Amino acid sequence: MELQEQVKEIKTRFRLAMNGVVSRSMREKGLVYKMNFGVEIPRLKMIASDIGKNHDLAQALWKEEIRECKILATMIQPIDSFCPEIADIWVYNIQTIEIAEQACMNLFQYLPYASEKAFQWLASEEEYSQVCGFLLLTRLFMKGIELNERAENEYVDQLVMALSQDGTRVQHAALISAKKYVSYDIARRGKKILDDIISFKYSDSLNRKAIYTEIKEEIEDFM
Image 1 (cartoon, rainbow, N blue to C red):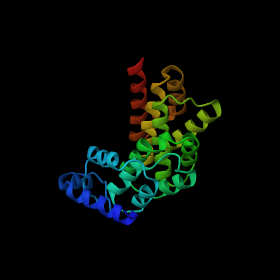
Image 2 (image 1 turned 30 degrees about the vertical axis):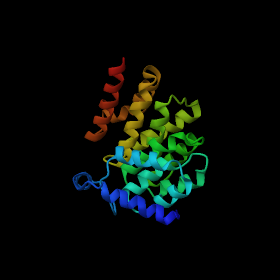
Image 3 (image 1 turned 90 degrees about the horizontal axis):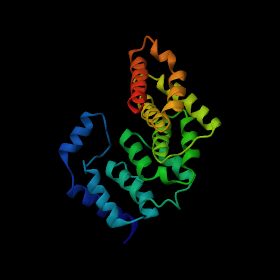
């Protein structure tokens, strides 16, 4: 079957499984897509299982401005043919938190160069590159990755800057990352993070005060 015919067939499956209620709920929550069939993730996983890993098809699906196509692409893209340059292109085209989360969970965390890319994306000026950087590190922390002293200092520096961006997607992703990071070494990592954001405790920003309290409570819950 030709590539475009495969894409067309997959879109037909999406239409047959479309859920208007889910799609409308996403729009109300700010997840806006050019096209969104509202197909649930479990159904997309079933479709991905039927298809198997397929580089060319994943690349074609990613180019579609359709929620389900992009998520499915992250599920069927083989690791060994996903080079760093393609990873950068994909991240540059991410426009929603959901796609960032799915890409990090289904694909990015398994890349042999995942840690390197995470730090590159953190240093980017692009919003969703930073978001992906923090979400990817969150996944790597969950897998037990250890940072050397230099990497940890770089991470904390980027973290403090991101947590200072009140009300942004980057701040939200950074907070998720920080909570997961400290949970694997409460005594040392927790103290380091709190020491570096101590100014948040006395800030005029209610948002930053809340972040300090949330991380502190996260630490206390594990002690």
